Length: 124
Image (cartoon, rainbow, N blue to C red; front, side, top):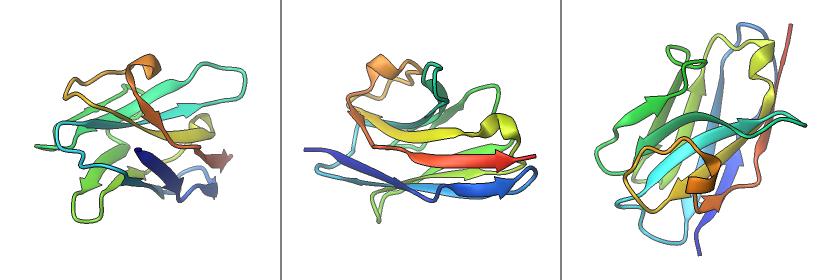
């Protein structure tokens, strides 16, 4: 059973940086795509970034391109999200997700496994 556990959220000020991590376990992730989504209470879950476990190809939402960097650490079975130049609009619960294909999907329904999320709050 795949388990995804996020960490690294917190309260920061606008312009600060934050690094999220997701510990992935339960199976080899070769051939998988892992991603970060975020959700504000009352709104739909929003795609942030995705990465192919093999090869490391990445894809970003326009809203975070140039500010966020997704990466994976194969040795630690970890997914990371480096977030720079944070704004209050980045405030959300951030979720780690995984799906068993190499397709770069941006829709939550395409992903098979989810973590419980970590709260990121950016004050102005």
